[in-house]
Image 1 (spheres, rainbow, N blue to C red):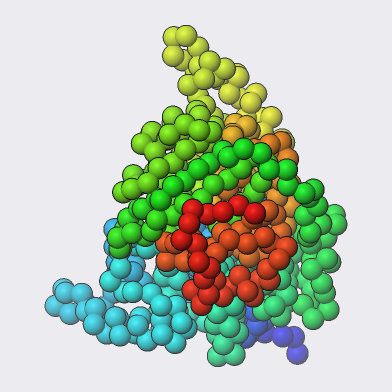
Image 2: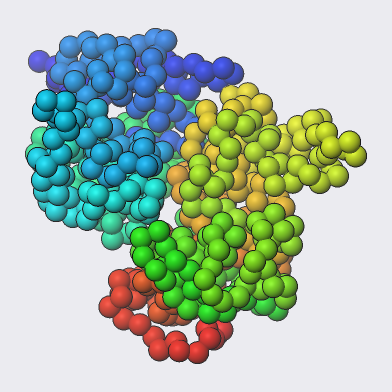
Length: 516
């Protein structure tokens, strides 16, 4: 007797203008298993899962649930069938509370009034059970990206779905939070739930999945049992070549100070002094990493540094010039580039074309605008085409593609290309490899090191400890808005670093940060 799968997607084909996102793809999910879906940025993973969740409709193929063919026209149909999804880019109403977002669409009413108390109890219970630590009454726009991700997970758990789709769920989580999520997923599978797990992080897949299916350029490559495979084999299946996991880099040649921050104090959305008297500097020819658990003032520090928010106190100098109160464009012109944490909110205009996003901070230059103030469309197109080719940005209609329609990883590559090609004096990179596959991560890391070797200053903010340890020359740990430690990555372990990140240890750094 043949096996009855929880879900089968058979011969799925999905086309968009100028691109075949999925071509005759078959995925079979067993009951109670964690099945990973692996592939490069733009390989069609999210598209396939959006078809299963009813956001897209396939041109060809069929979907079976428990052996019976089903038609999923929209997410409501998916929810009725017990299929839930945590999206890579959050589907949250920013002015609503966490509680309101979780119950949205499944609200209980009595005489026309919302009944929130039972929902609140259930949400608090789920939050405690899975150690998600989410405050039900917090407003979405006031909480960190990591907390928004947990809200999405709670939203799915609240609906008691039996088929759970996780699309890059750990992209914004710290290593500790990721370990907790892995444990949650294992427990959910033990409870009989079936999980489809999209991730670019091979160690996560090897750690938590039972099987893994690989897509490359929209086509199905194969499915392997995790116990019979390795990171090397999976990466080769994914990108069609061998990938280097260790970054090759020469010793840092430090020059003069490019960024000098003195006694910065900045407020956060939920409390005062989210950044508390922070002083640091970054020299030419070095990569300085700010490590820390999400929500410890990194976001507010970067927003103050880049001009997205005003600071309460302190000073910021770039190449010797006081930029403390300068607007964002002036900082950019003086040599600051910024790869933001939230690419949708601060990195892109999603309804603009790819070429317009690529010149977003340079359109006013003589190269791209004539004396009458009109854009030089041919110059912009040629410049965009050059970066698209150089950074392997995949888009259905090339430079004319609407950015919203691109995969998250390719949106990220567009931002990285734009910011690095400005040839900045200071490159601020916040989660620069978020949502990227191993091949793209390898490329971005090489680009950051190339900037360093060209005599530029690089400030990296990352929640990926392996990334921090791998490419930085100096590590600063931020905890509760303060710098609590400064280290050479060669002389500290990830475990020791984790103690400083959690606040269990701290150095006496009363003086201004001293360089090694």
